[in-house]
Amino acid sequence: MDKANKQVIDATDALSDNEIIARILSGEMNLYAILVKRYNQRLYRVAMSIINNDSDVEDVMQVAYIKAFENLGKFEHRSAFSTWLTRILINECLLQAKKRNQSLTINDNMSENEIYQRSSNNQTPLTSMLNSELKTILEKAIGLLPDKYRMVFIMRELENMSIAETQECLDLTEENVKVRLNRAKAMLRTSLTSLYKKEDLLSFHLTRCDRITEAVMKGIAQIKLNTLAN
Image (cartoon, rainbow, N blue to C red):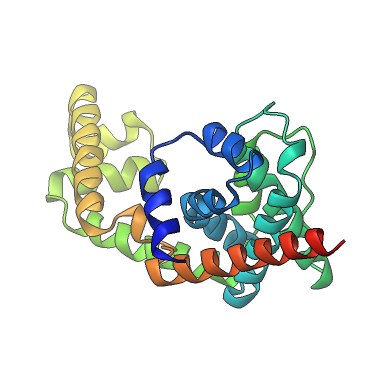
């Protein structure tokens, strides 16, 4: 990307998706790079939750971005651009999954949240690894709880013991059981926040973001050349 284009993009980075789309359709095609950078992280995480292959994910992302660009004039603003783009990506992921004989069906009437939840529920080696890592983190956090809170938490949340059974075992009042459980949960939230940040999970680093953006913009430039040639 040349210096002039970078300056234009930096100056328009605060624009809404719809404002950027309007300007792209008016001829400022270089602004599409803003949308690519804006949604690289989301598309990467969603795609990885479905096809779980890093190199394939990059290919699928590029295809999705190009298809979105080619159909930008057909975007009717019935939903957010981010939703529309995510659905395009998911459709491409489903094609990849089909090639691998993986089954994952998405109903056209599903909301974006339902789509994301469905894709996230598709168990893959990646999700298994994340579940294992998060389990380790949670176990560590539970182990750091003071004894009186840890016992109540484990009895109520892990062993599914009733309040009555818990208070009998620990010789506590019902109110004490509830208070200790709530305090245990509050401590865990604080502890987990310090142990990891969700932004660090499946993060899409800047160098990769730049690579994807450059590849997409090259593809768009080729589309423009082909259009002029025809």
